[in-house]
Image 1 (cartoon, rainbow, N blue to C red):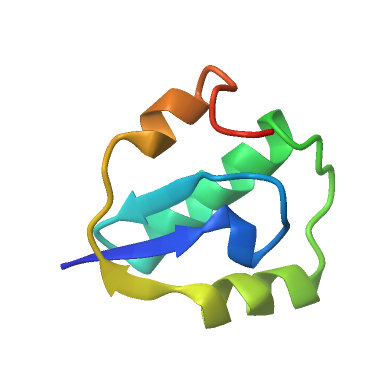
Image 2: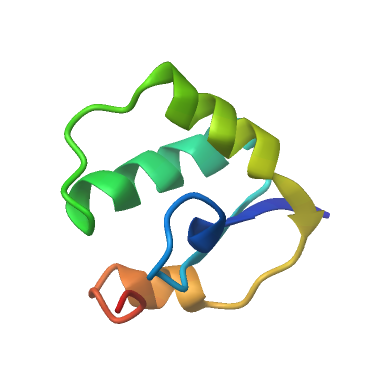
Length: 74
């Protein structure tokens, strides 16, 4: 089963669900999304801790693919 996280668990107003086979890949996707879609320039240690605490086992659909085009966030 994949690792997954919902962006809404980190910051409200975004429906992105990110999936990856390993925690490392999940962090890469979360950080890229934060930079490109939400304009976050620096990530604090608290943010990393929040991400780690929000990771779940599961499966998600193609929502993270849509987000490459900015279609997932309100």
